[in-house]
Each structure stands twice: as structure tokens, then as C-alpha cells.
Image 1 (cartoon, rainbow, N blue to C red):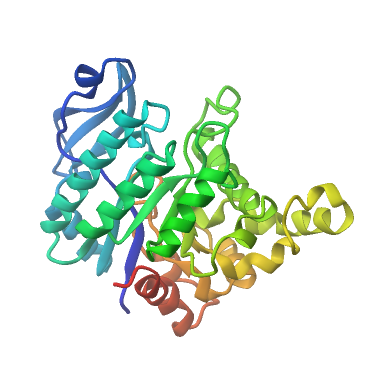
Image 2 (cartoon, rainbow, N blue to C red):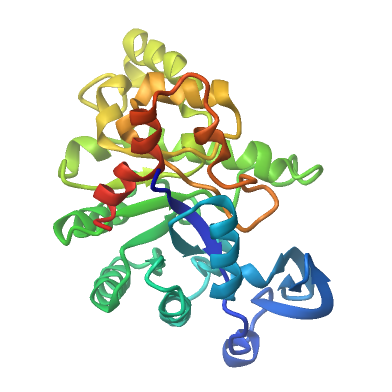
Length: 335
């Protein structure tokens, strides 16, 4: 079966010293190591003086990426920036510079990808005009869509400017992938990687719920192609609670014109849930035509091996597996 991975990340091998260029603290950079990881070069992703995450050559070397795709039977892969590169908290001109820098770098990796790698752009989401300008430039240059964080500071997905940006993407037929970042309750989730295991799923649920209850899906064109990462976080499991609140409390309805379950055909989710029962729930709630395979490669919390969850599902038939593994993504991203 054909396999398209819509959720993977990259870093350029090197980029200019952003702290030196702009001043300020906590800019991301790579500290390369002489040590190896499975015979591949390693690096430490730094945030200013703080170690953020160990990574290896698959992030920047297309040949390494293709080798591991071949190992796991992945035909095509879409790469996107890791959220630490977003720069939403920076001045707009700096964030736009970063978006252009990393967008161009992503395409350079794809050029080496033997027509098997594609890229999502990033934008300075804190500014509507700059975001629209950059996403249009990126599409013209060859990006197949755009990845955005699920909030900008305290502004959720129902923020007016974010909705205007999504409408711009709809008008230009630019698919949108929403990735959680800058997770909530950081003081309480600082230990044991709970920011990733608890905070990220909560952020993704919050982004979907804010789109629904904030009236985003009622306002936006049905032509909008939008997908949320990590299986929608805790959304599917807690949909019944959300629906019950909508029915019995008018203050829980927000601006939405319909119950939450009405909007399930307005968005897609990736399959990065790592559990067959969770995948079955997503299929039952969303339908196999609304799910796309995403691995979160090449990070340790990603699916290993890529595609294993869907491929080994005991409950999905071959047609449903092929929908999730490739067909839906080919249509969504026009691959």
C-alpha cells in the first residue's frame, strides 16, 4: 500500500546566528556533536543557553530521511518546522525573517528528496498581513501547505485575525496543519515530559473546541482544508462531555450554530495516537476518510516504526487503511 506521512519535522543543518542578528535571548540554534546516533551525526537543539532536545541527521539530511522511509515503507513525507522555530513571541519583522529563512531551507531539503519530500510553510501568525504575504509566497515557491501553532499568546483559534488568515488559506486552496506548542500550565507539567504527554493533547483539544464554539467553522468557507495534529489530542474522547454541555447549558454553546458533533466533517486529524483502541475511537467518531497518517518523525516520541499502528490494526479493513495511510493525504495536499 502507498504510504504518505503528513507529520514530520526538520531542522536545517546550520542557520545564521539569530541572537547576533536581532539581539535578545533564547533563540534556537544547533550545537553539533562528534558523537553518533545509529551511525548518524547528532546535535543538540539549543534554546539560548538551555538544552532543548537531542536530534540527529535525519532532521537535515534528506538521504538519511529517505533511508529510514525506505526501511519503514514510507513512500512520501511532508516536512514541517518544529514549533520552537515559529517566533510568534518576537517582533513581526523578526518572525517574518525566520519564516522566510526556514521555509526556504525546507525546500532545499525537499530538492534533495528525489520527489518524495514536500514541505509545509510557517508564517508570522502574530500579524495577519505578513502571514498572508508569506503563505502566498511559500505556495508560489512550492510548499504544499502551511503549519501553524494552535495559539498566539493568549489568542486561540477563534481569534479574528487567525480566522481571517484561515479564510485567506481557503481562498488560495492552501491546506493548513495545526500543531500544538507553548503548552499550558508549564509550571505544573515541567516534570516527566508532561508538557508533551499532557499539555500537547490538551492544547489540541482546546484549539478544535475554540474553533467550534467560537463560531470559526460557521464563519469560514467549507472549502477550508484544516487538519489537527496528534489525533486531535483529547478531543474525540471528550466529545460526549462537550456535546452534553452544549445541549444543557446555553453558556457552553458560545457562537456555534450547531452542536459540536455537527462539525466533525469540517476538519481532519492525523493518526499519531500510538494505540489501536485510540485509533478505533477516531475512526468511529471521525470516519476513516477524515484521518491521515502522521508519524511525528524523527523524534523519539514519534511512531516507531512509521506506519506500524495503522498497518497492524486488527479492526480496519484494507480500504480504510489505505485511506488513512495515503488516499486522504493525496487529496488533501494534492500530491
